[in-house]
Length: 221
Image (cartoon, rainbow, N blue to C red; front, side):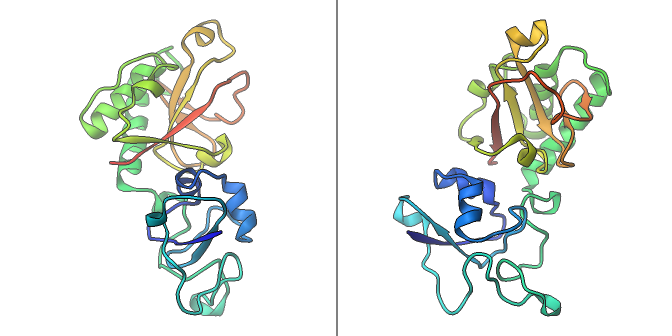
């Protein structure tokens, strides 16, 4: 068992990916009732093994996990207050993630608005180029292999969790449509918990059935 000191900008999803575990496992081990809410300065227990330089020993009397210390106004939370909203909220996303989400919405409105044109990879590629200045080629089920690994990293979480965070790239190997069974689908999360954008704005991505092979990528620029 090791201990990690949460830093400003960390999210439970990113930490779970970094330490080869799951959000649910971290939340359970640290008694975190709301995975969207962690605080800089709090001590997070990590089971298993990771590189020793990834951890910082917990110091002082700071509480672990969900036991918490007093927050502003005397209420108790899952750690020390850092003055920001909970991890996973738009206010806690990185500047690159917010920029990609904004570029994704603009690309969707310029292509199809709220109606699919069958050009999901075009929309996502255009958003990445407009946000970061480089192109990513491929169909919906190829973009995951073509995202530069020095600028994007794969993260492991559920679709429901991902949709709460803006600026993540979603890819599916296959969908239920004829074209989707060949080319898959890709989109960018908006962070509202429901919708994603590609060549159009999909109001209810969580309710879109028949999709398999989901992968999720976070920009690290």
